[in-house]
Image 1 (tube, rainbow, N blue to C red):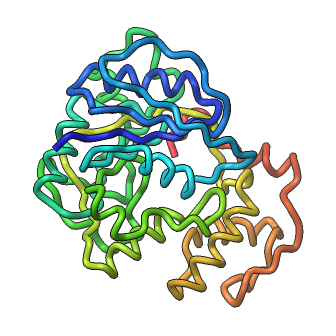
Image 2 (cartoon, rainbow, N blue to C red; image 1 turned 30 degrees about the horizontal axis):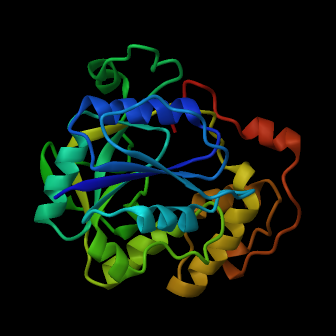
Length: 282
């Protein structure tokens, strides 16, 4: 199967350059589609086509932008890779083989890198040594296993799917506006349609460090809106840890599970206090 890598970019040009460099070090994809939510920067030549899809937007329309990337793809395998990820040399080939064998949403393991881990001349062995696995997602040493305990463990950071299956599911639901829950919604709809969520052992991607927030106050309004929409569709609340964090700060009412009431927006001081220290990978 030939594969297209789809990534979204908004002001992450240094991250994008390293993603593309990582693709060039392994079995190259048929193409890499870069959905440019911001302005496109010049790039050097790579041993595979890089196609820019303009998608200007003031916010982060993740669902709609990923669907735009899919529309530009012309292969039977799609690999969605967030712009802050560096693929291992075996990622494209490994995910492509897995998609040929399994009709599912197939996630690879992510190694979260500390600040300063990626420099010019980076080596994959160093990224592999420094990359911290996510504590709640267990991957096998090799092969694909069903995600446990439920579809909510799906992450869109790095996953592959057959284009036919993506289209059958309707892609990401664009009524989820901005950041949050659009990937969990896709996973729940996939599970309902009999499309499994699979964790693939072996090939990895490495998450490049950037400032993080807990809770992610920079996406406060998007998260509240999308959580309410998800609850209306699926009958349960996603992102509940973040919503609890919003309630502790007095941004939403404490009884938010009865229906979210926004009390106020976060202050700049609260935003600054929520920023994670650089030694926290997630």
